[in-house]
Length: 180
Image (cartoon, rainbow, N blue to C red; front, side):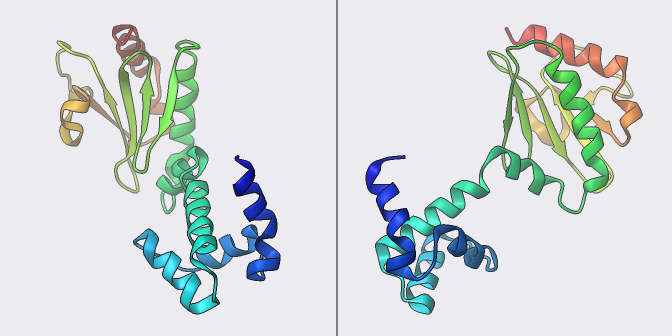
């Protein structure tokens, strides 16, 4: 963090009446579609100057886009699926130390040199695992990519932890090996 930003954060309580953490609580109690809406809210409702308002909104958004927050928000209302996600992540990380787990807003990408898998909570009762397995034949379980389009070549629909099995691991290993 650069010195100017540190100074601004340190001066925030004196200049705005609240610390950055207190402002984050205020912002999290509201929902703003745009950055400018949050800035305008702080300026009009709380008398915060533009520079401080912009900084507060920016730093609040960065925290909400932290990898752990992105994954947590994917499973809000779908908490029953989280053990499946955790089992798949453990299985994937055992493939090699070069696996990069990249959470996004609606999914989590698994990357080696290229993306080889994608985990997405599809419904309240199902996770879709997308795999990049060019040339692999479809089966009843290893379906076409469906909503993943060209990001993946195949999809496996998973509804319980016991479906995170040796067959799934073999497909994941194959996709991992092809991604080097």
